[in-house]
Image 1 (cartoon, rainbow, N blue to C red):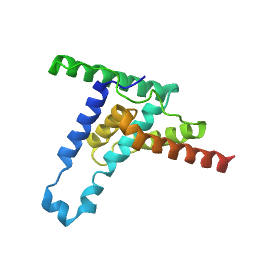
Image 2: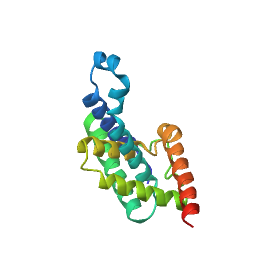
Image 3: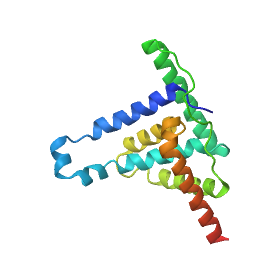
Image 4: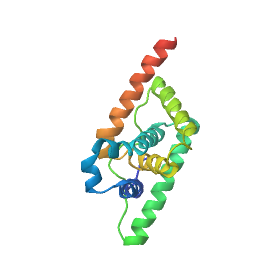
Length: 166
């Protein structure tokens, strides 16, 4: 499944929501930039899990990613068409990112850790990150700078992990 402008809209909306609830103000950023940016880490890691989820093409995880992307496509397209009178179409990007067998193994492990830790910290922030990753993970501009290196890193970790346990 390929993302439409509606899924990109939903992904960007979730990202904007997170940034607007996180923004502490200029004074706290000047006083402790690293500490303030560190509070965005759960969102960023969850975004990566969402992008990996939508890259999986088969199995239960692939079905969850496709269903979530389909829902975002439908909801976002509806917002664009009926909300502001815009036209929607396929967003520039790819239908799937190439995950090798080892990369799929590592992706499943990452998703299991995400689900196991979903009740730690701010739960809403993690789900916003996951949804934003699904909505934006395959769009062209984001995939070029974030999803492709993420897929490459997961594939490399999968090659190492399968070699280490074999």
